[in-house]
Length: 222
Image (tube, rainbow, N blue to C red; front, side):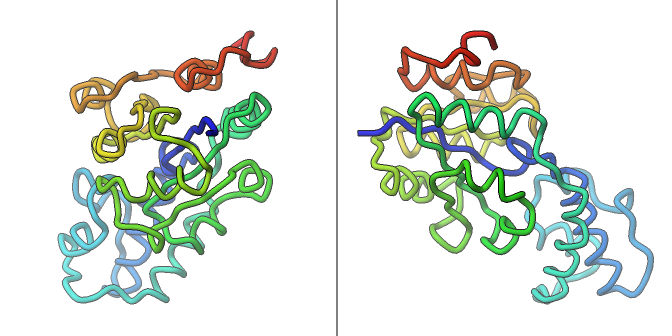
């Protein structure tokens, strides 16, 4: 069986905080026909379901998906992979650990948001269309099935309480990303097996957690 490192997308591999908030504000502005800025969004908008945020702004009806996609594509220009992302994924794969993405994003949004060099370093991508959303474990288990990895040989790196709950439900080691959307202390309280406050040395930490005893030279230096 393979060893595997699975990742959430937003706030973990992709610095998309501003892009997500810009999507919400841009969509609301187009639908309401008045100026809506990020400052006008309710507190906690970066973590709340989009329907809930938009309802707080006065949009109670169904979401117009084409308009949402347009807002996402425009705002996505502001989203960039974190500086460590490509190097970390490359290091894991070079050390024999399969990599996967499990995200609530739609597949078309993932293709828009991530550059080809990053997509090429992911052995599998599980999106919103593929499995029931987290905290259900289905997406993680689907990714592991595709990778030929058992839960005990895998980790899932996420930055929300929902991510931690999904990992625990799947019997996968939960690693809290302290640089993401949620305070490290909250991730620890949710039951994360480990919380990494800063991403420096992330590859080395994940190699140890997956039981890999032969990290490459880069990992040893991290």
